[in-house]
Each structure stands twice: as structure tokens, then as C-alpha cells.
Amino acid sequence: MLLSVENLIVKYGNIQALHGISFDVDEGEIVTLIGANGAGKTTSLYSITRLPPPEAPRVISGDIKYKGQSILKTSPDSVVKDLKMALVPEGRHIFGNMTVMENLILATYSREKDADLESEYKRIFKLFPRLEERKDQRSESLSGGEQQMLAVGRALMTGCNFILLDEPSMGLAPVLKYELFRTLKQLNEEGMTILLIEQNASLALHLAHRGYVLDTGEIVAQGSSESLMNDPKVKKAYLGG
Amino acid sequence: MFDDFNLIQNLINALQWGSFYALIALGYTMVYGVLVLINFAHGDVFMVGAYIAFFVASFVLSVLGLPGWAAFIITIPATMILTSMVGVSLERIAYRPLRRKGAHRLYVVITALMCGLILEHANLAIFGASRKAFPPLIEEHVYHLGGVTFTNLKIIVICAAIMSFLTLQWIVTKTKVGMAMRAISYDKFAVPLMGIPIDQIIVTTFILGSGFAGLAGVLFAMSYPILEPYMGALIGWKAFIAAVVGGIGDIRGAFLGGFLLGAVEILVVAFFPSSYRDLIAFSVLLVILSLKPTGLFGIAKTTKI
Image (cartoon, rainbow over all chains, first blue to last red; front, top):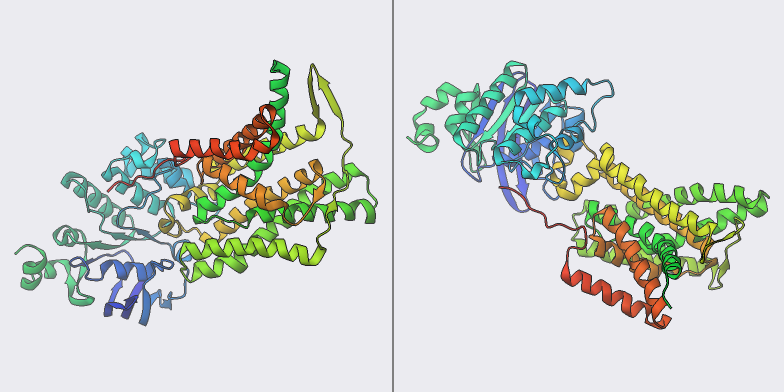
């Protein structure tokens, strides 16, 4: 397994957010965690990417392993630099005071010296032509959809081979949602491992190979996307009947 | 009596006086931009810089027996490096542990204030209350151009401030470290997600800010060669105000704010009794701030949902 989360119990302050969840992601897979607001999806991601205090959730017990090694003591920048995992956070968190191009350049901060960045920028602009048109604009002037593209493009420029996305479809017009999900599929076909967190369960299950359903800090269902889509309980609770 | 020469003369004086404010304000504004911390110890870091310059210059002149110009060339980089180390130590010893514990900003500001007082009183305890006379490093030449008088030292001070500003501006706009500084000031949360070690950027910020305070210390000691432990207090406060007037967090603002404060002070003295200087200078700044509370270059931050 590329990434395995084992019996993870996590607290935010005094509130227990995860009650011993386990899930895993294999190389080349698209795995999704679905569930309602407050189910613990974002907490799971933040635990993996080791965000610094005060955002960091406290792992009480359990383990997170990358290729069999515990990463609970890994720093957040090292998760990106050394483990090649990149998070596209909810709300995008692009650097609005900088241009689109500067956002992309900044993401290469810890790249190895011999990386062929020029061709990677070209690749990003091929995936998201709108970013090329606007590359010298301050990124806060972009539309919500363009900001999401930038957030994904920026994560790719870190040189990751595993991308974690937190609610990427939130606030996007339907057309842009499908465009983004098509791009994710294409990235996966090129070898990218993807862990996707979504409230839009239907959209997520259509893209993913496998899924886990989180409810108030516990995994209540898991399996292939088809089996989850056909599970009556999942259907009723998350897919609108 | 107000003629062209007089105006140019005052302008040169204002640029030189403002250069010190600008150099110190750069450090305030950079640390604020990255940590949202008003580093009230910064004025005293400037004072420590002046003392470091004193000891380095004295050592080079009397122990090594080198001539003044050599002492000048050695003292400037040595002081900048050593003062940077003071700034980095403050960050390590005082600010980082609080940051690790997620302390509220108020406590960090109070800590900064205490660090400044500790630097002042440690200086007083170790070197005593007697003032130190800074040795002359370069021969001062006075030039007359028309009715305007200026010295080589004034030109050096002004050039140093402008070069420091251009260097910083280049770092902040063109290098990845500088971009990371801007990124932290906008959205600290997302910076580690780019694979950027935040502490490394913070240390770089302290190196740069304290280094320029050290440069200001050398040049100030050369221009006004009397050193005392409290010399950094008032000038530090004023530089801080200059940074706020310019728009704290923006290095163009700090630079402009420094020169603006210098200009206001010099012009007040040119037309009013000198005891009015601080009263009128601060009143002008108060008016600027009440018209534009974010400072000259400050902008309100917006985020898109």
C-alpha cells in the first residue's frame, strides 16, 4: 500500500473527531472519502498532510504509514518535498497577492535542481488553458473556478505523484465541476494517485475506483464505487435516494 | 528665507535623516509581513548594531592597525552579519517557542518589548552608562555645489539606503524565498503545502531585517558618533511609525514612510523652532493615518469564496 491509515483516533482540542478509522490508498488509485459536513473528512486529510499548529489535529492513537513507514513525525513541508504528496485544500488558499505564474513558481520551491520546470509549466497550461491566458494577473482577480484550477496546477508543480483534494467541486458551476473531474481522471490515467474528499458523493463515486463513507468520525461503509452506489443505505443517505 | 538652494539643502538632509528610518523600518515591516508580529525589539537591534560596529571598528583600527578605509570596508559586512545573528537568536530564543505553543500574538508582542528592554539593560550592565565615541573611519569631505553643502558620508548613507531597498525589492519580487515571504503574509496556512519550511523563511526574514538594522547602526554611528544604550529606543519607535504610515507589511511603504518622516522632521526644523519637531512630525503622521488607516501602500485584504 502506498498510504495506509490504521485505527486513527484524532482530537481537535477536547473534541474527538475520528474514532479509530482505517483506510488505504494504493498506487495509481482514485479513492474517495465521502460523508456529510463534520464527518471527519478534512481532519483525515490534515492528519495525513501534517499541517502545523494550531490547525494540526492531535493524533491520539493509531498510525499513518507511507510505503510502510510511519509519517506521524514528518513535517508538513517534508510530506510535500520528500513523500511527493500534495494537498489541494478546501477554499483553495491560493496566494491572491501574487500572479498566477508566481503561484506556480512558488510551488517549485523545494524541487530538485535538475527538474525540467519549463515543460511542467507547459503541461499545466495544457491542462488548464485559462491559466495561461491569465498567468500575469493577480490571482485574487480570478473566478472561483479558475482559482480551483490554479490550486490544482500549483499542487502539481510541487512535483507530487499523489494528490489529495478537499472538496474541489465546492462553489463551482456544474460545467466547471465536470471539467475539473475530467482533468483529475486524465491525471490519474497518467499515473497520479488521488485521494478525493467530497460532499458531492455521486460525482466522487463516478470518478473514484473505491470509496469510504465517513459518518461522525467512523467509517460506516466501504468498497468499490459501484458497490457503494448500489448500497441502499449509501443511496438513501448520500445520493439522494 | 526660502530659496531653491535652501530647499535642495533641506531635501538632502531629509534624505540622509530619512535613510536611517527607512533602513530600520524595512526590518519592522518584513517581520510584520511574515509573522504579523510587531518586533518592538528591532530598535534595540539597531542599537546593538551600532555597538557591534564600534567594537569591530575599534578592533580593526587598534588591534589590527589597519587604516580607516579598510576598517570601513570590514566593519559594514561584519556588523551586518553579527547583527543578523542577534536577530536570529531573538527569534530562536524568544519568538519561536511561543509560536510552537500557539501563543496569542499579544504575548509575542510583549515578549518583543521585553527583549528590547533586555538588550538595552544588558548593554547598560555590561558596558556601563558612559557614552562611547565612535572612531572616525573615513575622512569626511565637504562639497559645495552652488549654495548646497553636502558630505561624502551623507551621500554614502543615502546610497546605502537606496541600494538596500532595491536589493530587498528584488529579493521579495524575484526570488522564491521572497515570494514565500509574500505568500506567508497572505496565507500562512497554505505555505507548507508548497513544500516550503516556514521556519526557514522566518529565519531569512530576521537575517535580512536585522542585517539592515545593523547597516543603519554602522552608518548612524559614523554620522553621529556618540553611542549610548538607549539610542535605539526613540529612533526605533519612529521607524516603526514610519513603517505603519507607509503601510506595514509593504517594503515600498516602509522605505517611503522612512523618507517621509525624515522629510517632515527636517522641514519642521527649517521653519519652526526645533522643539516643535516631534510634535508637528507626529501630528502630520496622525493626519495621514486618519485619512488612510492602512498606510500609504496598505490594502485591505479580500478573499473570494
